[in-house]
Amino acid sequence: DAGVTQSPTHLIKTRGQQVTLRCSPKSGHDTVSWYQQALGQGPQFIFQYYEEEERQRGNFPDRFSGHQFPNYSSELNVNALLLGDSALYLCASSSVNNEQFFGPGTRLTVL
Amino acid sequence: GENVEQHPSTLSVQEGDSAVIKCTYSDSASNYFPWYKQELGKRPQLIIDIRSNVGEKKDQRIAVTLNKTAKHFSLHITETQPEDSAVYFCAASEDNFNKFYFGSGTKLNVKP
Image 1 (cartoon, chains in turn yellow, cyan):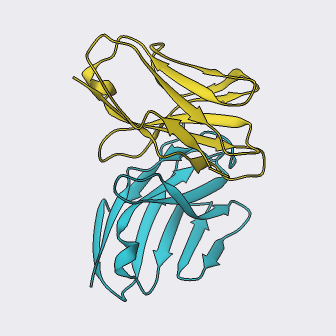
Image 2: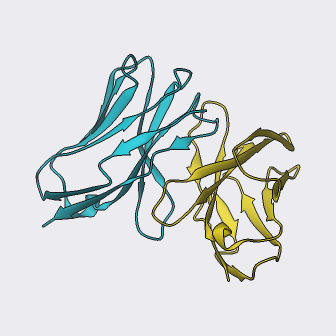
Image 3: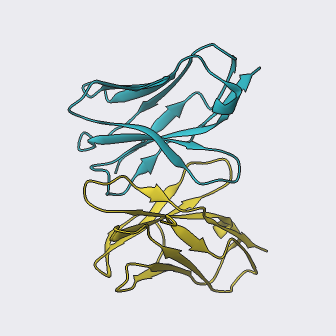
């Protein structure tokens, strides 16, 4: 079991560009949550996907959107990138009565 | 929404001493309180968790206590070792698979 995987590992973009991050959940998990972790801070909840629908959303603008596929994998899209979007983006997978497992993250740098 | 506060932001102890990290939360609907350890450049890893129907839980050198009335919970690490050095995050949630609200983190440094 590979656990939660994310791609790419690192990404450099310029302001105004768009980015797509990908996550594959741990085997047996059907729920995917995305978090943004700025340097020196705790992760902040972006949104959660279950059964291909956005189930919960944190306090992030509409520039942040996502998708979940029938195989439970998920994408996070960010449009019109700002310098402040530079962060580690963590994906976590879970299911009822199971703990959330975090992926290794994607380090996004916006120049 | 939920607000989780964590103290201290940094903690330095001598190897073998105990370390205590404290968190408070605001939403009485929170029932699940995990603690994560994050080493530099790595993913957060669950080290212990507690649910609101339990006041204390222990796993070897690590223990967590919860006071639901006062809305605070604490992580206790005994006999600290240099490999315990990392950033520790507390979190609160309605359940283990719901969205987590994280504290700001505590950087623990265990000096050999």
